[in-house]
Length: 198
Length: 204
Image 1 (cartoon, rainbow over the protein chains, first blue to last red):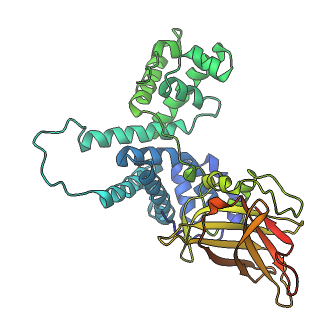
Image 2: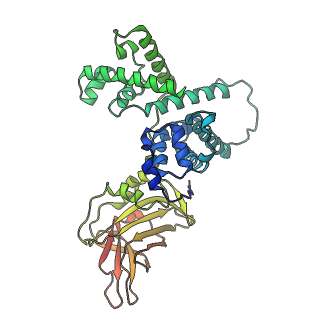
Image 3: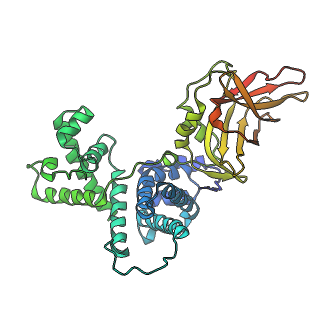
């Protein structure tokens, strides 16, 4: 995988007048990136690298190809951020479209024409279902990035590692009450973030 | 199959109904979304091919500082390649595709910013390298720099280059042997009539 980014020099005096990139919405970051703001790109990268990679892996099923597609996605974001129009909607759906296109391109490059059509309908989810699932996962993974560092691992351990609250307390060596408090807080923040993304 | 978390255990019983419903939606979405996969090292950090200092600064924090000119017994640079690889993604610059980047540190207190980029080995077994250094002293009287791959007390040359002064020197080198045979890189200063290898000016 090769990236060819032609980056303009960073405009520091402009950045001084602007709010820190961390506080910007996704759309605002895209607008800054369109102007060559590397800090904005860094922040956007950290927000979306996991959702993009997860989407690519889900679609391509291969970590190496997913990594390539992820890099292509961020190259595309850098190059085409100027085509984002805030009046058409928030940044996350635009980014999702860019990611999906890069991943589809990567998948298409690999696809082979089947020699025979299958006799029976596949039990796999069809494109619409898969698209819906992918979009849902994208939003959730993006929202997870909004959680504080001391809360996110609690949800990851509970939901994706299958640990009970007691096991999480043992694992992280924190009191069970703290686990419960933080978990509820994390779920609440996640609900907030998901509502904002909808 | 991972155990599905118990919603009631997670949020408790004392949550108002409306909030409970909101949390339940988040809970259901988390289950439906599935886990975020672990990122490969190459995606941990964004990287830019012409981003002086940035990549180097990040990678530098992972490495012990070497304040002396000792060129031998370098830390396992090959392992570092994989480690530091987390801070790079492939990029192209002047036709060069870097797979990894390893920072070089000035061995004698010079204010030098330098790194080695390692490209993809071709089908014949050639590894392209690219050395970027800013702040190297310009050598007079035909002096030049030479880069070596080290392995214990042994060293294999990777090539020579001239340059220095205030501008950044960028040179491409090619070596036909595997880096797995080495434990680091050094750059030496070679002056005419002096024994090789000359004093070390940069080390990994």
